Length: 287
Image (tube, rainbow, N blue to C red; front, top):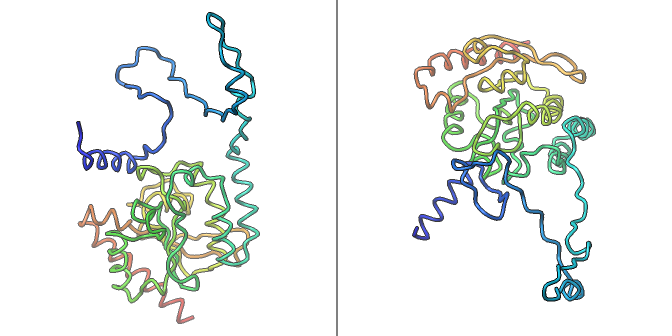
């Protein structure tokens, strides 16, 4: 039998892996399933009154007579379709006139399935009036706990990267392509990214930064509608625009700090990209 500490460790591991919901009353060994059909999921038990309990008492040898009201759950509202969720996101995002409005709209939005498994909404950090907008892929475990993007080891490296070109979090705004942590830190699905995209577009429109920096391949592909990997996208300039922006915005992808922690050899290329960003900011300031 496991000790209490071992039990807690196993439960914590399951939560980090995204296993945080009970689907059936009894466990199922997926490696020893002979029937191809999935196990039946038990419906929630409806509360029963004293009268219902008395009415269901069986006579010896006779079948039970169960009132329909005691076992039939009330019909649940079907979840919104992906198209409906995107339409709602567009409506809420367009109605946001300020960053606070956009934040509140995201809090009230239930169209992204990631919200059900995440601990916190992770919106932005930094200065909404800054000159640079940094966009990552999705919150991780520490970001989910704190409700702040880019904290922990990757956040500390990002702070050092910004300081190397004379910037800090007061000069930039940091966010992600999705605003809730995917279970187990998996890659967000195209549907999840599409559902959050109207809010991200509105964030760009409200900020109007001088430069957008997608960090990592998924963020770069999502924002720039490109299919190439980050190795071919970094070191180049692109433009980002939406129908409501007054003018296109310069954008250049950067290696994600988490990737640089795993692959230190790429820090030299990242340094060249940071110098390129600094030069572009200096050029814009001189105009």
